[in-house]
Length: 298
Length: 86
Image (tube, rainbow over all chains, first blue to last red; front, side):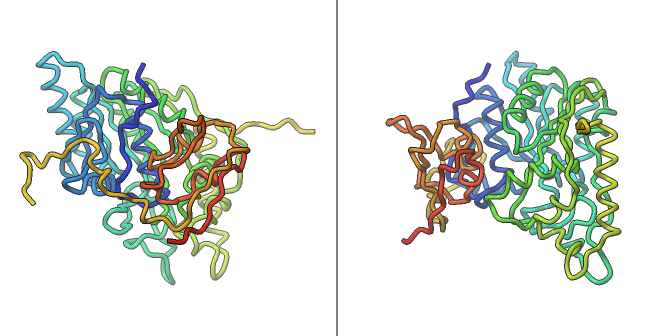
């Protein structure tokens, strides 16, 4: 067991007030403990946590390029193995580095079966460079490269299902977590780290600047994503879903209304057809992972 | 500024950057309402809320950015955000 009272991601980093990614970094390092080497690809987290000569990390940390965090981690893991050392290798990368740019290296590393844990903090766009869309951006979200306007409702494509892609690689443990449920998040990270082979944890980390809500709402927004069924917290062992968080589902509007990136669905006129498409996605999620709690009729 | 070999930096060197100056609203903790559940300590993105010597929780105002997550999530509504005058 690791000492969870230690703060291994220190104060003084330059994340926005209320940053979901900073919170996820804190929780992940808490769960991972001191016997850890962290590899970070380029992204918002790398920029706000390590402006030279400062660093917020209190565990060994190495920065790689956008695309090759898993290749760097593979090398570190192989070298530790050769030296007979037992440090755990953890990758912290954003959704851009995971879903788009790093995909080839991730696929390679998962195929080779290195013993590391890949953690993706998913804030659903390239936040560090100014909110450009990524493969993780949800349907109809407005970003600077998928702006909503007269001819468009924002991002036209649904979110890529990376956990399924990595499950197809034969990963022994895959989980999704959310900053709204910190105990669950830490438990999943710990489980992934202690499972042999390449494991993957995807953390839903709301970004107040990119999504357009006040910093204090970070946890509330993350909770709404789960309560509407647009984000599902589940665990997959050997490719099979073994556990999923069950909820009494709310309509998706309650989640969409909290954020400026979906504002065009309500103003100037309400776009019922588009909201229905998003509701259908939540319904599909609910069916796929069986997350609905059936209330007894009174 | 000279670069160290491998651009390495001392662990936790970010403490030099006193982010408390970013703050507009200041969280004020109510001792009466606090049940010491520890939720504010867990959910603070800065990790700057700690238990004090007098067995109470308080933020480190040197680093608190005043995001207000603690006040929003406190189950006993024991934290108020107050406009800070500097």
